[in-house]
Image (tube, rainbow, N blue to C red; front, side, top):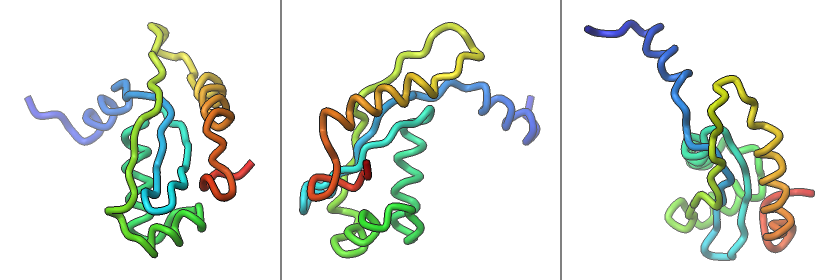
Length: 117
């Protein structure tokens, strides 16, 4: 049985994606960007897509990316958020808390990173 576009879309929306905190790092100067997402791998891909096409909102990271190229940027997931059994649960607050903890720990500001306080 083949699913329609609408059915595929609904199935995708119901799929649980890995949630968590991620880091994008410029390996030339060591600067990092910390972020969080309910779809952490999708968000990493989105960041790199935006950087490649010159569309990223973070102008400092975009400039460095343009200067040194994609091969000098890496990404990794710093921490995954384990989902609970409540399908309707909103993870936004938990992700914000986790992100704040990582920002406090790594201090990715000014010379050390691309985040802003």
